[in-house]
Amino acid sequence: MAQNATIYKVELSVSDMDRHYYETHKLTVAKHPSETDERLMVRIIAFALNAHENLEMTKGISTDDEPDIWQKSLSGELEVWVALGLPNEKVVRQSCSKAERVIVYPYGGKTAEMWWDKIKASTVRFANLQVTCFTERDIGNLARVASRTMKLQVNIQDGDVMVGVGDTIVNLTLLNWKSAA
Image (cartoon, rainbow, N blue to C red; front, side, top):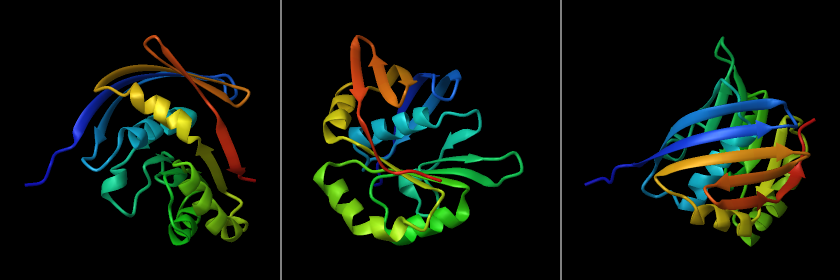
């Protein structure tokens, strides 16, 4: 018998001073049985970093032809494609041909660094690709505050990201490995 997804209710308040975006999103996030708390929190923070009224979480981990998060224009074109983890070069190439902007958020410490060393030379040609890594320590700290009902306050200013969950504050160090043109 297949296991069901676990549902998380998230009230995500985003104050992004860099983009002048201030909004609260009420998200219902389905956590796949194989998904870790670390990946769940990366997905939520990736949503906050790219927050927009048309941004949506997708089926993500349970499908190969969709990113974890996407933003489509009103006419259906893919504007933003957000992938988590360590996609292979073929997936990155296909993503870059489908969307105006592609953002990959790798995480996992040394494993992520080895993935980037292997793939970075082949990504130079993609002007619409951004790769921003989360540190292993930060993701571990976020995973510890994961709960089925969360109120997160994400403040972004000058590239610094602060996540408040209850009485806990986690400051994230984002490593920009590749910027989009």
